[in-house]
Amino acid sequence: MKFLGLFIFLVGLVSMLAASFGAHHFLLLWVDDWGKPIGWVIRALITAFGYALYYFRRNDD
Image 1: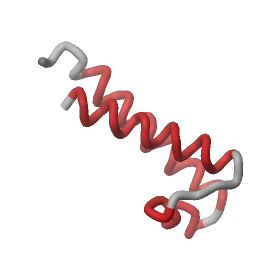
Image 2: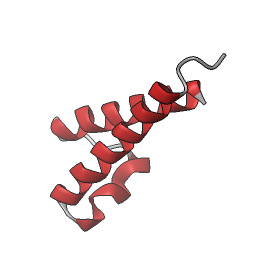
Image 3: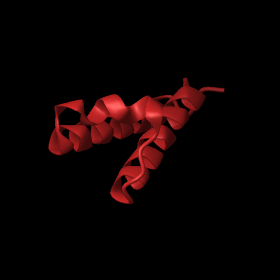
């Protein structure tokens, strides 16, 4: 779970960075279907979920 949380966190960060520069990955285009503000909220939630998963499972081996 630790690795999965880290992976989700990094995907969220890369998505936020790419969107801030105007580039979009084809797998994450659905995020902006509801508009830019909601897309940013979804990206932030994905990033926060990944960080929470990593944080609470960081001691797992």
